[in-house]
Length: 249
Ligand SMILES: *[C@@H]1O[C@H](CO)[C@@H](O)[C@H](O)[C@H]1NC(C)=O
Ligand SMILES: *[C@@H]1O[C@H](CO)[C@@H](O)[C@H](O)[C@H]1NC(C)=O
Image (cartoon, rainbow, N blue to C red; front, side, top):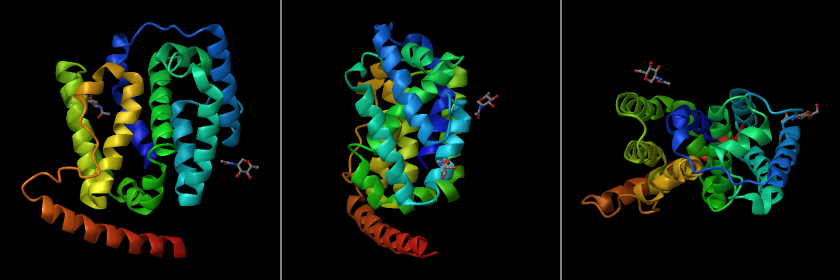
């Protein structure tokens, strides 16, 4: 599910690349990020930076094996984050990533950068929630891709017509979160919202105030809040059962 998300996010980056802040990353930071990523890619058996889509496929293939593979991926991700250390945020920019990873386009650098942000969230602050809801989230990625694509198509159409805007990204974030909320309850909405935000804010930090607040009580304040909560509880129970079933085979 994470990887599929990365693809979606990747597609709009080119539209907003021009608005990023100027790079202020020292040469030592570029070298450090290069080193940290080389070690990270080695875990996936890549000897140099793969094309972003190849990387996404490798992560997909790994994570589809289940929550323990996700946990393994997170050990690699947190090692990478620790390795980058103080160079984030200074060097967490498209320009620095492009140089450090040796990718040919700015667009690909932004794809890697947003994936970095997403990984840092799902393997950091979001870790326990993602692990606890792993099989429900995975199910959305595997069996409800069309719901996500509907959000993405609307987002793409809006950007094609009007150019990138933080408000288009906000609408996409809400749409994406609602898909996860539909299948995984309020916690799903919170996770979906956080995944998009964590990735996007690496690329477009200036959108921070305009994106929705990711809450575990996603829309719980609304008129049917109580009913939503009950439905979420049922879904959570269902997820729990499905999760057990997936672990058996
Ligand atoms: C990398 O290669 C090793 C040795 O062939 C293999 O055991 C491992 O599963 C591979 N890792 C990935 C993520 O493909
Ligand atoms: C985005 O919209 C444009 C214009 O409608 C279309 O050509 C392109 O294929 C769309 N991209 C995606 C990934 O849907």
